Image 1 (cartoon, chains in turn cyan, orange):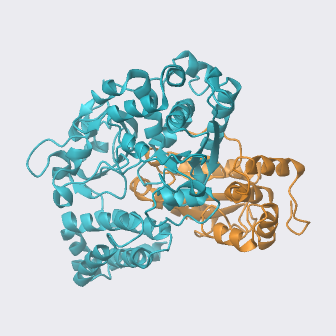
Image 2 (cartoon, helix red, strand yellow):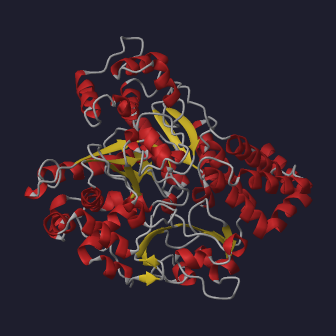
Image 3 (cartoon, one colour):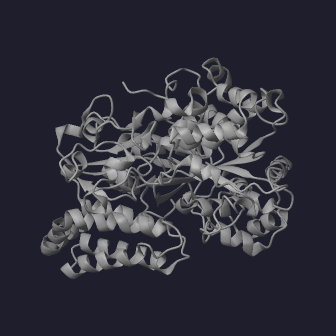
Length: 443
Length: 181
């Protein structure tokens, strides 16, 4: 069994409540930070830990914190990104609803380090019931002196609020999230300025993912060095992986970075293998935005090395033969899966979620969805596959925010690794049309 | 509550609005727009009519257009009337892999409506949505605040029967504690 830092206590009955959470060592990081550490000491531990943003980008958290501007007399904000919407990702929902106090605790310790006196947790609207769980945890924290004025007699003040969204994937992009928190449409801002300089209400702001902020708790408790001792190279600590698709044991797993992908898929401790003993066809390893890889390339790299669950190993080979750890949304597809049809669900998703600001994304995502639909329906041509390739290339890198890239990469990787399958749909179009029409008659 | 009556929040709801506004710095009351719209939708028949949106604008001292542009951007806000139970079935990748399309077809057959339609009795509206973060418990649908997960045809049947016999409007603000996680 690997070491667990976030989910160590998730099996304990009543861990949702303050009392049980506290009995199991809860809020120790706040005590330690407020009583024995200066804010910059907390930052130092986070830097030492090597923690990287767990929302998908993997940017070093300590570095992000150190960019925060600190002008005199201007409030600073910490905003937690709980807008988890990347298809295949459900770890934050699991963590927040199972152990809500770990996020509240992480918010207090992190806010102290950043010198924030008001902090927000922005949660996607569809998780309304989770917001209510968090609200309950926050009132318990207030009642026990962990929030409000003069926390535990330290002289430090903090107010923490939950804000619900309205259903928009784009609000997971940090500047769109801030716009939404200001009561506007979730249109990403042009950067620079980055939120660290001008974020919420134009004030210096740090935006961090739920898992990132929660990881600050074990980092402060055990020290940054102990956290960094887990994992491989620059992939330190543990990572929550959301496993779904054609596996025997879907769910959220906390892994030590560095276990092999093969173990993760086939061992009984994790996914427990493919349903009905079928063969593995492909994996989307880090949420819908990252490149899909065929079975051989996800198990071993192009160079023939075992692929590991780390930022670096999953990215080995670049986009030609590799992928990304992303948010840890691990979607497994068995041998009977149509890559084209799965891609259609992604293309529809990005088309639906494009905010509409940038033409390449607004128009391109719609075109891609339509062309894939056309191919699926038996009306595609070989030129359509090339056209699809051209469109994704023209979206990538040409938009204000990364949603354009996120829409392009699944299309590019599906064509790169499974072009023959697209061509099958084109070549057998009359057959496909017959099946479709037969379906229609029987509908 | 019917929208033909005067549009006004209950005193309880108004207190909640004041509490929401107090969470933001002075002059930044617009930040409360999304939470207040959720509250308005729950209070006024599950959708946001132009009159309701104007009322929200007045409450927050902002222009009506600032409310319209936000309400039309986010997918959880209904700008047309919906049934008492809005069934939101996810069909993105992981749900599709585990049979979401078949679940949609099954509901269509059972209720005699197509996606996007409402049953004649005004009880159910069927909507397909994008990933709701329930991929490990796919296929799933949401009704109000409740996630219904690991769906089978049988499970769908009993959920629909249950909802119908309750006959209550479901909202995102319902207090639910029995979700899977």
